[in-house]
Every structure is written in C-alpha cells, then in structure tokens.
Length: 342
Image 1 (cartoon, rainbow, N blue to C red):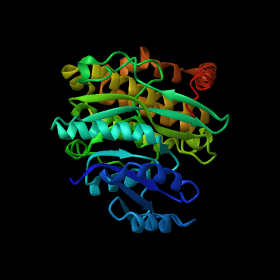
Image 2 (image 1 turned 180 degrees about the horizontal axis):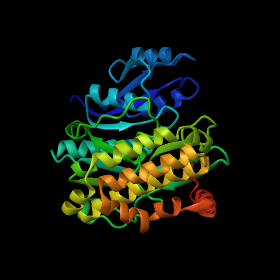
Image 3 (image 1 turned 60 degrees about the vertical axis):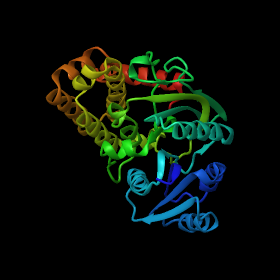
Image 4 (image 1 turned 90 degrees about the vertical axis):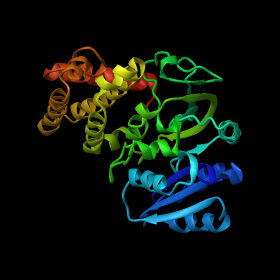
C-alpha cells in the first residue's frame, strides 16, 4: 500500500459527464489514487478520456480497460488493483465536494499517523435531483457518535428510509479483501452488496459529519429510474438472493444485536423493493417470481421469513389479491413522493 486511498471510478460510455467527477477527485492531491475502469465503452471516447487523465497525472491516475462486465466488475477491478489503504467507489456521473474531501483525507491521515486504522469511515451524501433542481442531504447525526471512534454497540436506531449506501462509506481496503467481496458481473444494484456484505467484518468506525458525496439522480437512463428498474427487476432479484446467502443474520445478531437488526432492516427493504416492482409488473410470471423469492427466504431461514413476512415493511409489498396489490402500489407511490428515493 503506497497511497492513502484509492478512488475507483467505473466508467461506461461516460464521456458526457465523467470529467467533472475526476476533476473533483484530483483535488485530493498526491496522497490519493484514482483508478478509472473503462468497462468496454463503445459509444463514445470514454477510453481516450481515461488514457488522457492517466498520461496527465501518472502518479495519481491509472486507466484500466476491460471487456464489459458491468458496474460490479468495475468495482471488483478497482479492488484487485487498489494500492490505497482505504477504498471508495465514485460513480462516473457523481462527484465529491472538494472541501469535504480535504477534511475526510485529513482524518484518514490522522488514523494512519497514529497507527489506529478504522475499518470504515462514514460521511454524508447529497441527493442532487435533476428533475426539480433540489438537494437533500442524507446524514447520520441521529445514528452515530460524532468525533470519536466507536463500534456497533454505540449506534442508535436508523430512521425509516435511512441506510448506509455506497455513497456514504469508505472501507479499509484489506477488510474488503478479507471478506472475499466479489460483486456479480452484468448486474445492476450491486452497490447494495458492497455496503452490506462487509459489515460483520467491521469492528470500529468513525463518522465524519461532512457532505462528501454528491449523488446525481434523475437522468432518464439511470439505473434507479423507475422504468429502468422495472425492466431490470431480474437483476434486483439476483442481488436479493446474493444478500440472503451472504450471512446468517441470526449468527450476526448473536454477536451484535444492533448490527443484526440493522442488517435485517436493510435486507427487508431490498426484498420490499423487488416485491413492489414485481407487483407493479403484475404479470403471472412476475408474481410467480415474487412468490419464489419469498419461498426461498422461508427455505433459508423460517424465523427470518416470518419476521419479514408479518412484522416489517416487506409485508406491505406482498399483500394477496388484486385489491391488496393496488394498496401496496399506492403505499409505494406515497413513500416515493415523501422520500424522493428515485
């Protein structure tokens, strides 16, 4: 490891917006490494832009070109090649706040200087809504202690709709390797696996209350666009199955009740999202996939299934009969309007 942090930027036909992303990261200076992963771009000059940055900033930027493997393989490629003590993914259509970046880097330098590395640094992120030109800050002041290193026993309850996302976390690189994190290829929504699977390996963390990550949302072809999500529901299901299989939540809860509770709620919301989009589709095939997902959950863990099926949010997304499905969709629309999550 010869860099403080590696920023991995998966790029796929990103020429129209990736330069803004990279330019903000470059403000971090020589302590950082930026790995631009060109994921088989063919429709624009993404590859040339990656190579130009690598040639212009040879001590900071590396360009890696690969056959198209999807966002997850871009993240994997970054992890395989990272030389930073810490690792963060920044999507090519997003960017970072420069002042917040400097504060985050200063804190990481302190951990290295004191030889007291934390497993995870958490910062705020900002939803940048293009459709109505509004912003919404996602912070964790109600959840995490500020200004000290802490463990899972110190966290407070998350609010509804409040979760750790890829945008908010910086992991210690070796931790990601130790937990054998490998994201599936050709699959959207793998950022949920990235932020979920490593959590039981995290022993200590630090919350820095700065608005670091700027999450651009609202582009018509974006993966979180509702119509796009409906067409990619099979990939969402793939992520669900991966998350269900990745940990025994009963074992996690036995070691840390608070972590187990958080991970249950995160998995529950992921199951709810898949259920609601399959309900939205409404075809017999889609409703059959919804049934299969729930039956798989029951097969893996009956206790987990019962808790999720009858005592949590996903229960409202899996209501029987046509009137029940209409109610599920109405509740989803209301929640989307309140929280503006896509």
